[in-house]
Length: 88
Image (tube, rainbow, N blue to C red; front, side, top):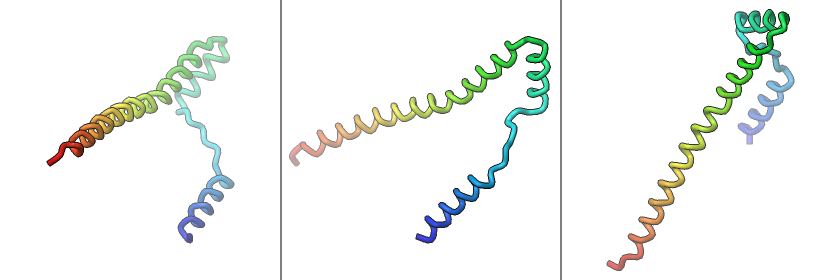
C-alpha cells in the first residue's frame, strides 16, 4: 500500500510541477521561423509529416510483432491440444 501511495504522490507532483519544454533544436526552429515568415510553408509541412512518420513507425512495428506472436501462440496451442488428446 505504501508503494501505491508513493507512485500516486510522484504522479501528482510531476503533473503539478511540470516544465514547459520546446522539442525542436535551435537550427530547426530558426529555419522554420524564417521560412514561414517568408511565406514558404512547405518546410513546416514536411517537418510535420516527418514527425507523424516517426510517431507511427513504432506502433506499426509493435502491431506486426504482436500479430506474429499471436499467430505463433495460437499454432502452439493447437499443437498442444492435439498432442494431449492422443491416448497413451
